[in-house]
Image (cartoon, rainbow, N blue to C red):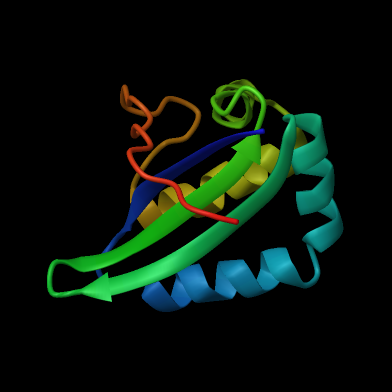
Length: 114
């Protein structure tokens, strides 16, 4: 299974909205999230909040094969849940996930495990 991790900026003053979105996705919308992951070929997705002197970031990690599939399908999706989530993410990050800026996924340089 392929892995990918990347960051999404959180706009100033939107940290609490991000945390509320995470609670909503983990709670009342957890069934829709699981369906979205299956629909887009993902098996696991995790979001982390990193706060630092230069601002807040969402660190996204997911597993899928190929690793680019979930993002490629999410961006082009017209599914009602995906459209709702893209609108929420745009309010928090300023990124239009219907038409995101060009990005190259980070290269994994180190992995350890047992």
